[in-house]
Length: 92
Image (tube, rainbow, N blue to C red; front, side, top):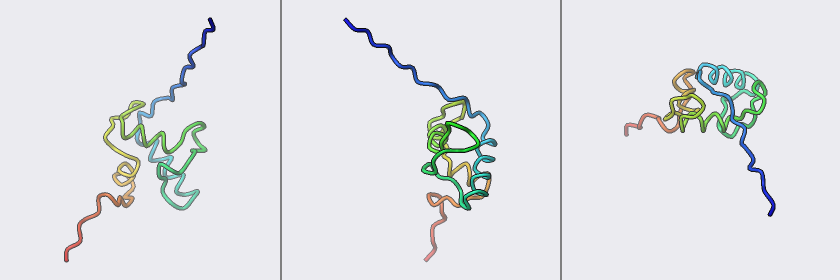
C-alpha cells in the first residue's frame, strides 16, 4: 500500500495593519495611475502577495484583519476613492 504525503499549505503572514495595505495601494496608484482592485495581480513590494488575497482577507477577516470590509471600502475610507456600490442616489 502506497502512502501519500499530505501537502501543507503555506500560511501567509498576518496583515494586521490596514495602514500597510493603504500604503501599498498608494504606491500602486503612483506606479500605474489608478487604484488597485482585486484583479490587479501581484504586489511587487510584497513577494508572493496579490491584491486578490488581500481583498479576501479583508472580506473574510483572515490574517489578523477584522473582516466585513473590502479593498474598495478600505480605500474609500482612507483615500477617498470612489466606491460605485455606495454612490448617492440621484434626485430626479
